[in-house]
Amino acid sequence: METTTSLVTDNEFFSAERRDSMLIVRGKPHFTRHAGDLKKIDTFFDHLEIISRTDEVNVVTFIGSPEKSGGDDTLEFFESLLGARREDYLLQRLLNLVNNYTVTMAGLNKVTINADTGRISLFHLNMALACDYRIVSDSTVFENAFAELGTIPKGGGGYFLSRMLGAGKAAEVLQWPRFTAEEALTLGIVDKIVPQAKLEEEALTIADYYQERQVAAMLAIRKLLKSDLNELRRSLETEDQLLLNRVNSPAFRTALESRLAARDARA
Image (cartoon, rainbow, N blue to C red; front, side, top):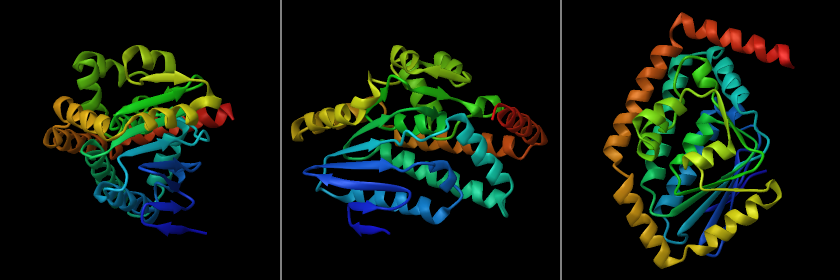
């Protein structure tokens, strides 16, 4: 059952609730399994457009589901994609949606906080990098199946990481198959690590800090440091071309089949 009143919604993909001037958006389990359902993806991005236009909230907190499978999510996505009808159209449509999301998030006139846990794919990390503040649980591990498939993760990682770490270190991190929450904190990719049981509580405490004055300062700092939206768009377009070239190559299918076989052997 789905109920929606402007900013407040609850469906099988995500939920959103108001707390005064804060909006809390919670991801539902198995996000990647919905990636081929353009209607569900559109629902989420349409909601983001509503958020971007409203003056009723000034802080948005995104809380990820702990029920993720990290790199296996990425493998499952590509497996379902390559088995779909009109795969090129579907992939291009999804790339466009992710591009719109990333640009909207980077330019959003709200403070954005991302709290996540568990096995986090580089796609999910890239989505978090568009936010202003990132917090993860101490059990978090980041998994990059894209690198193992010989391609790059979608979502602006090259743009954001090169500004946070410098081009050389960003290139190194984008090739890591996995890294821990502690390594991410050392790099500055995440801002805080907390126990799993305290993740949401801590995220909301941070969100409560941002009142009107702090919001204005944070948004000004964001524009000063990282919101060159034209450059971001160019970077996202380059990602698209690199991904499409790789996915359409026979070598990609061979690498995917090998990784899927290794995954099934572990099961």
